[in-house]
Amino acid sequence: MESENATIQQEPAAAGTVSLPAEDFGRKTLDEAETFADTILKRIRVKDAEGIKSDLTSLLSGAELLTSGKKDDRGILATLPVVGKLFEASGIASPEAETLMKSIGVISGKLDAAQFGLIKDSATLETLAAKNKAIGASLAELLETGAEALNTARKAGTPLDFSRFETVLRGLSGIRDETERMAPQIRLIQENDRALAGKIQSIIFVLLPTWREVMQTEIELREDGGPHELNIDGKKPETYHEEALKEAYRKLIAGLGEAITLGSEAARLRELADIGLQQLKREIGYLVPKAAATAAPEVRQSPLPPAE
Image (tube, rainbow, N blue to C red; front, side):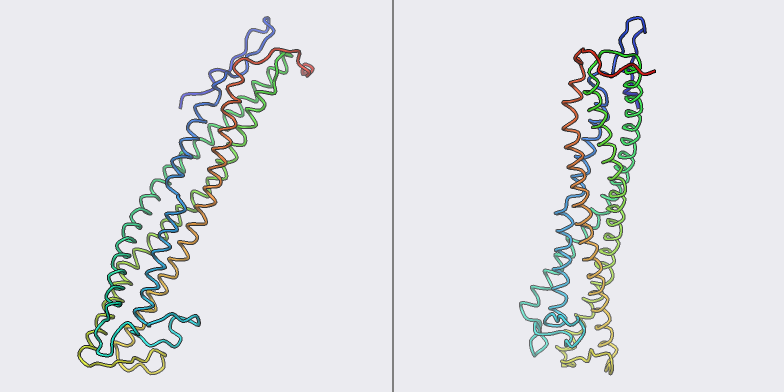
């Protein structure tokens, strides 16, 4: 990276003046920080996480309704008969059940696309984490160089208004602090993306197909005059299929519950990061015009005595 400190020069002592950094001091890093903030804001939108959570919740509701006929606040498997009210006495799926099954297929397709998006975002966040680290290092270097220039000017007793450049340094320090706070947030979002993508993959490729398969078997058994009521209390399983259906349902509901929890955490993490990034953009917005004001510092008698 080309150094931004090339503008910091000290004139010959005989001239009695010292040149503080010019108006573009830190501008390159500030531009990079602003671009970084805009880029990552597009990647961690809260509404995307909320959309995934909504789809997972819809899938959970559909699975509950198809398998049990209703929800039960005391627990999914507490007292509910398997394959419930959406199936007619003959065992033929009602129009509502068929519509619900189609909806579940549509939702699983959306979640499949979402998991690829999460994987892609995780890879992008890896690059952005490195960029955030580089920006933080550049800001630290700018602060060190700027402080040295300011100290040199004061020691020389140069009659300049130092307050403007001090404001710039305080602004740069605030931006550096924001980048430091952002680093762990990026990693947490990245870890959540990976965990949620893995859980969704398990749901749509393992848990959901298994559940749909045993549900279809149950429908066929009913159409053939098979049992219309199944024992799900776990005490006296009558057939292997009953146990298979109960286990597939339990695993699907548990997997969806875990994914929904991850989706809630995803929304929370993104909201926190959004707040930090908006603050970062505000800090940059405050600083840029003030940085430009250092171009032609007002000359006056310095109130500070020369440093010994």
